[in-house]
Amino acid sequence: MLTQNQIKDYEDKYLAGYAMKSNISRGREYKEAEHPYRSCYQRDRDRIIHSAAFRRLEYKTQVFVIHEGDYYRTRLTHTIEVAQIARTIAASLRLNPDLVEAIALAHDVGHTPFGHAGEEALNYLMKGFGGFNHNAQGLRVVTLLEDRYPEFPGLNLTWEVREGIVKHTSMYDLKTNRKELNPRQAPTLEAQVVDIADEIAYDNHDLDDGLTSGLLEVKDLREIELFDKAYLEVNAKYGKIDKNKMKFQVIKYLINSQVTDLIKETERALKEAHLKSAEDAKKLKRKIVNFSESMQKIRKPLRKFLFDELYSNWRVLRMSHRARRFIEGLYNIYIKDPELLPPKDTKRIKEDGKRQIVCDYIAAMTDRCALDEYKKLFDPDEKV
Image (cartoon, rainbow, N blue to C red):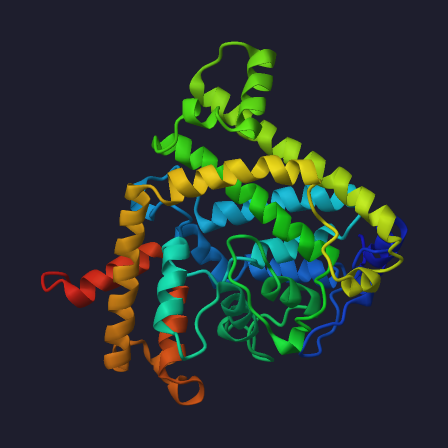
């Protein structure tokens, strides 16, 4: 049996000096005995996987609302894909793969139903009352709202995983500051890996879903240098293959080329920075984990194309408009009549305030739950 002490010895032997090792963790908010054969980060990972918030990600969507089809990514499939990409990067850079996996699996647990349209709607409705940010909500989920343990609220995750959740930043994330987690200090290299893995997964899997939906066309994408290069490489290797296999191989090539570039560029930056410890990395004013300048340059047109042709497509905008209407309708009726909420939620109103409780309740919903709830409250023919 591999004991926890042996895991720590393994980390000391095989992880880089700048990796965040479990034996130097700042620990948990509430003291607990260590587990005999899991490191603190492995234990965090397992707590996240078994949480209700993680399970609900199965029915929370990215771009396409759940009833549009079973093929499209949900928050859960996206999260698993981020974790896979992030572990690959971490292992190559000799960072802590267990910490990376824990942060990756938790990075979206604060998301609302209906993707970013839901988050924007709640942020607007909570204006003047703290707003809404899914990173801050994710921290709230794991520190308070998950109710599983008699000894403490939330999941009592380690400091490093909580920091990774709240400092998660990509082009898709609204910024947030939490004083208790040193907002002026850079996140761990492991958290930086998750940020980049999130962007890689987001771009390429939204591209996959866009092609599957018919909203994007290969002929248009071939005007983009990064996509066309991948297309030509796949065509040269396999010749004429059916369009589904071609799509899969192009997406695979795009992910692999970006991950490879990221690893090489980050290795170069690490050598240049002469980092001796995980604390050295946190003191830097810039992120170390990044693409080369050339990759950053050729990624931009593809990302702009996705924004213009997919996220701004009239069908997606219609879905987003409906989503905002559902969120606003539910929020307003709960604010007006909070007794419509379950008793376990209303009992927290005195402590946290009505608006925060309503916000928590809606943010926790899946797409399907929000749609059903809207029908029950607004459709006179629907059974309550």
